[in-house]
Image (cartoon, rainbow, N blue to C red; front, side, top):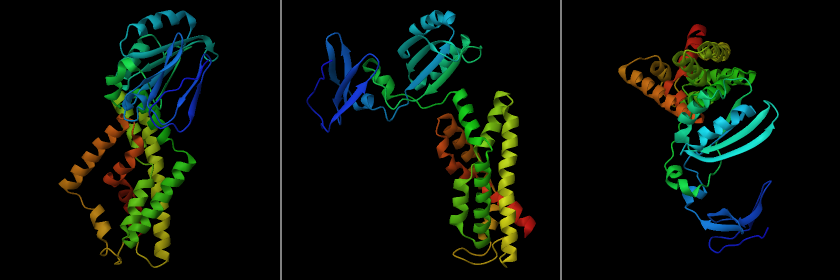
Length: 324
């Protein structure tokens, strides 16, 4: 195939794009999109929001289905306007055996698309599977406006998958939770606010609570796993805090922060053992923010929710109070 060129933009070197049926290159540093034609490759200047979809969340859905279900499913998908791309690979799925259908769509359409697939037994019938992903970019000239103004909500299945992954009580998670208790106990004992904030930031203590809540709402068995994981993670935190509080007592330091540092004596203990309408409002607002972050596939930002909820210093004070 000939290698096309185009004028405009910063030509810092060609980017090679290769696949099983095509092989072409285009100058880097530009917003030119390749368009396949009968005579070869051409280039069309695309809006930056489409050539690089950094502010949107286009989605790729790959499903494996038995061959006898393929035609019916393809027919249902072809009639949908929100399907931006549809590819079929017959007989390429080894496990489960069958065909692979790849769908490109907007994030806004994911909920209805998943419902359609569920109606056809994808994900529930044996012999089917489904994988969702987010491409770095998706170039579809006919869907410029839809991609530029797309949403970022996650499907229920994706939220369950993320919370399950982040809430699993692995040895690493329990150790980090215990370290969080150590830092928080030292911070409270020495009135060092930065240590307590650091302990809240590293503690993986929000996702188990979310998994429990989602299980209750969906009436699934996930609430049991979420509850068990919540108890395990905060038990590790309390254990780390209790061991640290005992060590501080042996060293002659009160675990309840009765010494003046850059903050007055016991100010942090007093603050986190007080309850008022303001603290209640903060807790409710932080919980809502955490739910929105999980629903919008931004669970990585829930560390800020942990700071607002102050669950770590609250649990640490239980251990410090018992020891002190």
